Length: 392
Image 1 (cartoon, helix red, strand yellow):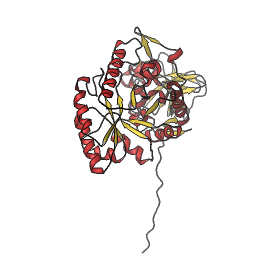
Image 2: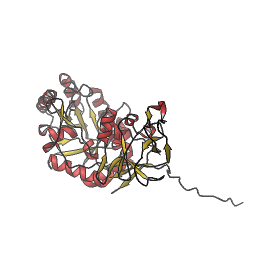
Image 3: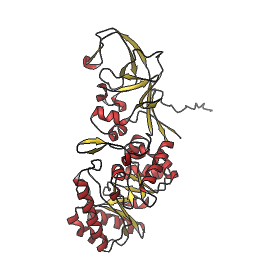
Image 4: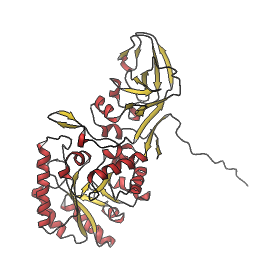
């Protein structure tokens, strides 16, 4: 008996809220950072947290094609999809690993960050079991951040473990600066001084790590003394860096500026337009009340998409080459904006939530200020239900 079959087309998202990711801008930013730190300094391009919400696989491929020799991720879970996608660069696991992951790390040729003797012992045993003669690791030192890393006074235990691990090679030595955006923070100088003392101690024990790294994006821009043989830019690759401060005030310009471009533009379309009378309360809690008759556009985007709820106070979008203020509280799936006075607005019009149009700009720094957070959280917070569209 013959059985009829029906091929069902794969469904694509039709909700009109999406993010456009410019891989061309990403490549540009990588080149700008490389020019800034000079050719002799290796770049570990950070693609953790799904490349800060931009799409880790696609960004990793573009960075690899642009010449990145290293990529930085948080964990094994973030590294595996890159290897499965054919990414062959060196990959640094910046926050170590869990017991039981060591064999997969060795098998995939990943470079783990370590800071405890037990981690070294696990990796040594995994290398022996898999017949790997030499596997590289990076040692992280806590110079004052207080998160991960071996305390300088505990280094003798690390030295002992390394000397008992002939299948491992200490390729890198790293630390993390707690206040790199604060130009007059004495803690940064203190951390760099401790790190230099540790580096000398490591060498005196007979180890010769070739990759020394302390600088993230802001340190790479503002602290040339932190530019050892590797840097770990993340945010700069996606077009941003934290505002710099001195004496408690924001400073910018001159050597503190890089010619980088935002990589992500977030868009939606107008779902509905409503004509409201004066004294009409809008949204949950009625926190916004129209002062006069108003034309209100309803956007199919909300905090479930990562559109921060704090934007209802001072936030804006771009509609038909005009700014339109957000009015009323942002809800899970919908946002209201006032389009009164914007000529020709209609259902289906494109709206820019993050991005630039003809000299108008709403960026992640603006969102961050309104939400009392930083651009990292704004970008990483754009949820998975917002499809990413990749372009050159």
